[in-house]
Length: 394
Image (tube, rainbow, N blue to C red; front, side, top):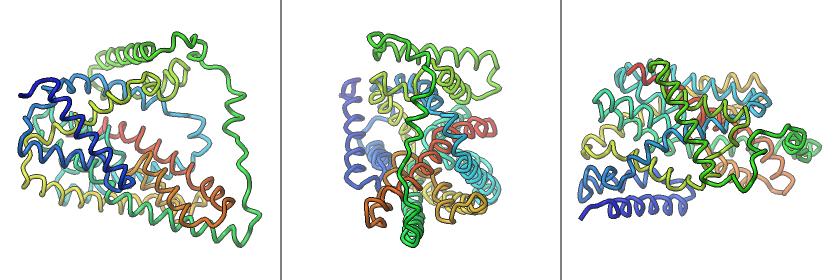
């Protein structure tokens, strides 16, 4: 019954159902939570334990891991981060708070291995969870690796409502401020477009458009991935592979070899992301209802500890930079969200609070860029680097 086509079709249906339900609930039920629930039910009933191997998606996922890490590096915009350095520092302090409390309090309560495996995904999510899971599997500790994915899946249940609360309070504060002083409302000056107009042409912009096909971008990504693996081997594994791939992506983007988000231009993001997300589920194959129940208790304990760490570290620093308690907290909590969830939550808060289009524009301008930059720093970049270091401590 089970062959390559059947296995792929079943996995694709599961992923689609998760996507539809997540969309219908406005992201309140994350796609990965639905997908994980369906996979668990499937593994405990009718799905073969090796369905990912049967479907061939395991091989695709291995390629995808290299491409996505390079893709992540390409999104690192040095100019934006320098301009918004206060947001960057506040976010880094939130990450420091997570690591400080989880690696101390978490170790005392749950043990050293659980604290280490959980700390990385708590700083940012999916790719960090993948790195920690791979490290655990390499050590023959598959069940430990599952903890990282359960954290990735469950962190939205804490992050969504708490961040929504802080964003709404910040929106109310700003709205009250501009109602007392309407002169604060100003038009967006379009500095970003001016910068683009005066910036130098990048190397990839000289490549004729008729050559810039999906095959071209896949080739570039493949060559960069090969280069990253050569560097990894030359360093004898001293630096984790994920960190090297991110650095390769950053370097290639800054030099101008690849544009930001190259996977999107390769028209391959869909199949590659499907394979990557599906590969996360392999760790659930040998779980039982009892073991999952125990993990959920541990995960929520770590999430509470991490949330306290975020608030303790990000609020004082944010206040020194002129941010309110609400804004500093929301920036720090990007570790539990990332794009597009922070985007949706910010827009929802603005829509609830703003009474006029002018107020809406002002609140959006004051809140949204900070949230986006915070997620780029935490979820896109730093969490992968943190995972690359912590995986060596397992």
